[in-house]
Length: 263
Image (cartoon, rainbow, N blue to C red):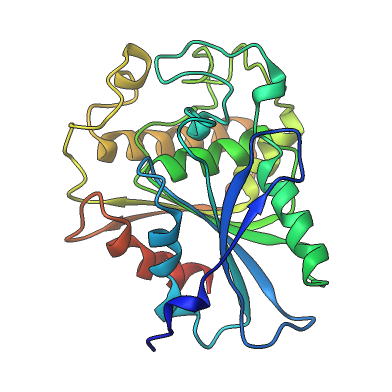
């Protein structure tokens, strides 16, 4: 269904002590007690409006609000690390910069703006947005995320003894054992496109290379590492792993798969 472009609303979110964030969102025709909410997190191109546009065909008859925040590069250079470190692994020791409460804050805003009954939300992140999403789950204390899809991430924060941000050792944001249990037993789908093997924009720092050469290797290694932790620590593991055939590093090919899972 081709909705007109005006279906995408835009606000400037300024209700916090961080730089303003442009937020794009689409609402269903009628908001009621059953209306759900989904956050869509862009990749490094930071094209939130393109990302949310890709969802229009899948939500036109669904009772869901889709929200796509845009973390601009000047204010949030390392948004995919929640501003807690740099791509080369240098820790940012200023907690005032961290955005590990961002989505929680946005959710509270939309919940109150539209008087939503739902106490949970879903998340979809692609590429740098997938990095953001799994780290958000790991480093925020917001357990209201009901279901997440993490697609084509460039690299991961492993639940191992590697130093943060490659692992969780010396993480500047505390991660409790209880929270790790929640992280692993929450419903999450890890997606990787089988042709996402171009190395052009892949983090090539030493810590990231240890995770595998291509995004495909890294996704597989990450998932397997979580299976091992689940076995060793007897933690229920509710993640699923899916390879998307005939696809590369393209959110447009992944969105229909994510929509099928989340909606």
